[in-house]
Image (tube, rainbow, N blue to C red):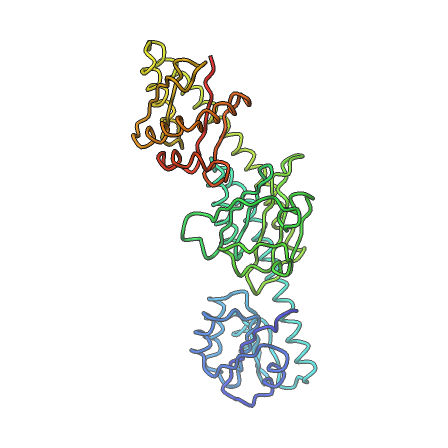
Length: 418
């Protein structure tokens, strides 16, 4: 439903003949002096301003000039008895858009007011759309400067929210059976970071549905959907447009555009956000490729440093220490623990352990004696691949002492075979 147009009427006559029509058809703001009219422009975005020239004859020209200086796009109408050509030219030069005569009928007045409001709203909508399209091109260029996905998504949220006065933006990126959620908006702009969460893929969830089907959905009130899980940083989100993020034939995820609580998104908004979603998908792919290249280069350099260190080592303890230090130098890696069996046929008899953490050494020794480490080794041998153990999973319960000692919620076990 379209909201009534806010209309300011500047007149000191409370019983003016325009008052009845304006109060009935519009969101009517009567103001009785010029200074108050100028101050009111700071708080309300008017669709129309009507000035009574018969009352404010001396101040009308100055008032029109000041209004147009502050808000050049707002139509200003002058109500007059019968202005002479000099007066009319003076007011037009100041910025007046039209004149209403005292002889106009109520029907004619109502029609002219509605026409002026309609033309103003159409002009503002066209200007906003042009500005939005220009902003999309600018935003897309800025996104290509990002070198990692976290920075890319944070920049995208900040740019979209500030450029289009949105409540927030949500990104849902699929990773196998889980979805990584990133969200931010007006309440989080000052934090410099996004809300992050990992959820199981649920085909009935609005975001997962879009990811699975590749179809844009517009929800007037997404909270009415029983499968929607409220996002903590965007508790008031209602009208949401969810668009798929597609790169070539790959469905990477979905982007949710959250309008302000009092704004409803429509299919007309697709012309703005669909191109952005397409550009963002390309930027995400570019960042993924850049990160993969970076990892490959760093891995090669790291391996080269490793070979240089191992080349002149002979003793087992020297190899273990060098390997541990090399692992701990990997970005995002925490503490490392390395152990070798002197006799693989009887692994429980002699084990050499290297770790820069006495508590972890003690925890490992207990787990070794209890047979827990032996079970981990058997599983690694069977899979012949590294295994990630998560401290939040039930099956990793026996390993928790080692998790606590290493101060890590996850531990990666890498088998070393000769």
